Image 1 (cartoon, rainbow, N blue to C red):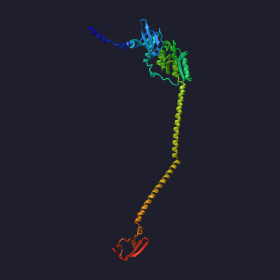
Image 2: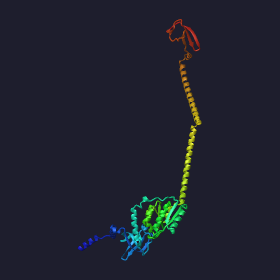
Image 3: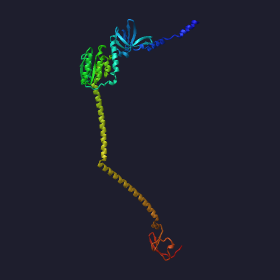
Image 4: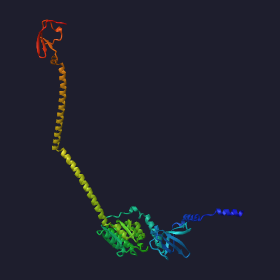
Length: 408
């Protein structure tokens, strides 16, 4: 019975493989020593995968460790690796949970012989960065339209040929001034510095400083403080073009613009004349459209002003006044006619009313008008007496009469 209980307790403490691997991975992640360390050894089983990743083993006399450099980190590799090379690999050690294996995830790889140079490179880079020589506010813009291009590089080799060929093809009117300088060896640094200063005195519009590809030792002249200071102090915009795209030098950080290759530097320095011609044609078309639009606008304004001038000219104003006078005359005549018609109507009404009050109209109706000898209208028997002479007016004449009797 006790054995059974012990067995149950043991079963309760069992973990899955994934839990164990996850725990180990967490231990690696929390170990500061495993982050950002450098490991040196011999390369073996090196394979470049079609995805861009590089898988290899790093070994020495006492052990091996699996390594991988992902495609996104390939910028940290300036040469092609092969089995048997002695290298220094910088990166992080971590656990791949699915397989339960730890491996070194490489961020940068340099040949072991370049280890001291690499340390010197990093030290100078830190010093110059602290001095502000890499600060973006000191970067000058590269002029788009240039007339003179200065080049500091070796007068032989593919770099200068590529620059001359590409610059000439893009714009044959740009003058290229070459300062031939040694780009490796003991004379490289003073030669490059003299070239930068000489082209600055010639007031070229932009300057390319660089060389073709090579090992870290071959490119070392562009990692020297003197060259970096000359580039930083130069009043002419400088394009750094050292080695291949994966090569990085101190000159790249100090220069106003870094080109991955000398060919790319020529393309960045010299604007393609065909592009300029296309833009000029587009500007010309736009300008013509704007001019025609402005001409049509001014023509419309001229027509409007012409109409206004015609309207305010003396002859026009006279015609306008004449038309106004004619209109007023017509309106006055219409009003007079309306007034006369109104008065005629009123007169006809008055005539009709007067007819009702006219003695003649009364006489025509059979009535008579009686007046005394003095012409006074006799309306009452009290106005006469017997023997009074009267005149009786009838429709067609007058009748003389004498009062013979008064009857009330």
